[in-house]
Length: 235
Image (cartoon, rainbow, N blue to C red; front, side):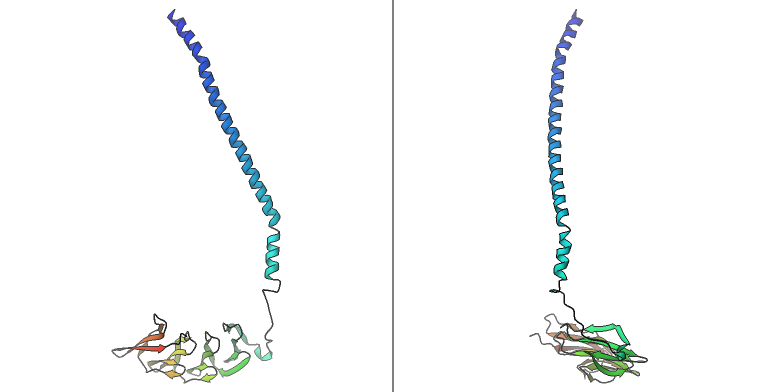
């Protein structure tokens, strides 16, 4: 008889277990339904945004390029027609001043070269080794070899001939000076606007002082170290 009682009690508990399972199943169904609705809403929003971008996208490049290349922003003009004598124009030699007006290039004629500045020809040399405009675009300088010597030309004025002119070759930041290092024999001099410093065994690379008021260089002569400075106009 005790066995029958246990069976009855088990039978009585079974509906309660099923009811709890049904509640969990119902909660899971509701959760899934909410997630599906939210996902559908998100997909609809993204689809709407994508279609809106597709409608606008074709107009963006056209509007951008029509504004950029309408002729109001980009202007082009012919400034020079190369004549028959300019057929030896070296395109890699072209330099321009930062005012956008002045320019220079090299003509190569057989074994000689010459600089053309704003369509005006300079003297003929064996080789042009360097050329540059000043920062204010008002001056132009270059160095050139003639035979075994090398010379600097500043605004058309030739300087002294040296065995070798080498770096630094530059304009000072205030555009007042063209500076280059020249070697004569075994000695070196720092030349400023064709004016020489004393000659040293070696001149180290010049640099701007911390306050940018001076161009400073150090030089070695024998067992003595020298220091030189060039005042700059910072007004």
